[in-house]
Length: 435
Image 1 (cartoon, rainbow, N blue to C red):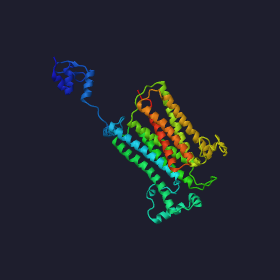
Image 2: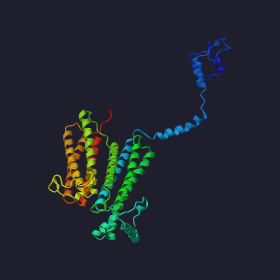
Image 3: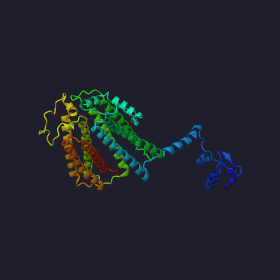
Image 4: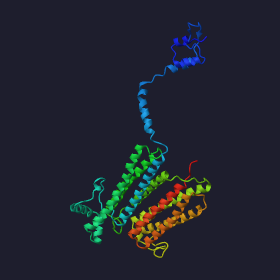
């Protein structure tokens, strides 16, 4: 007959008693006589299980020390979420679009600075000291005196007299461009730190933040590296002080690439692509979209070489160049490959035909995609891309025929950014959605 006395004498816990009540009788240590029923009880596996239940495993001192650390780490890591709540996603997306807008402002202001020949007015680069412009008359005269030591003033003064008032205008243009660039860094960095603290930056987005920050810093370096090339004695035949067209193209190209990254990142947060069928036709269209995007970017970069060499002033006729399809001075520099980057005639020739090819490519792409099962937003982006391509081509031709007026040239450069925006938007809308 079951005896609770045997169990209690064995020192078992209430959990063991509960198990014994379910059929495990005489659960005591191995080979121990039960004085009440005079039976020898053999040890069982159930005994070892119950022994583990009543005697928890000891925790080492190191593990006991790490327990709160593990808890803290997991709590902090818990802020790195895979998906953001809707309100946070909209805020982060708006911030990225705002950063993209700041980059556009820098590109436009940089173009105007270049067109007004203001980029070489500040002859040094100091991160913090440059943020305060000259205030007194004496400070302005000292700054003007430093500017007079460099090639641009020598060239300009040989053509016409430059007054302190003229210098102030070009100085403020370059100053505004530099301060805007610093503003891009602040608009990016301060919210980024706040969002990191709030846990609104997903694990997938953290590497992108590092890329954004790297490009912003690289832009600042490229800007001064470009200006520095214009402060050196010129070796060009006409002797006009210019920044290196290679460095100018690198500066503009990295800015456009940074803008595209910001814009695409913002669209990913604010506008989820509408699902479309994953057919072979759609796969082909996705490949063509990235091809068109690349052509738009390459054409914009060729425009940087046009600006760097003032190549827009060489042949101001269209569609021919001085009544010829192929001008006589197309290849005049040895080795021949340098003509593509250093001969103003060749640079304008390349930019013309790259632009015409891009318009034709976009038109053909629109024709191929007109019957594709695109979503409404993708269809709108496609139509905007086609319309902007013709507007941009018209702006370029008008700028050329009117001998590159500043307002039209700046509008033409802004149009290239707009065209790039529509191509990026279309690439976002047409991308393949995960199943």
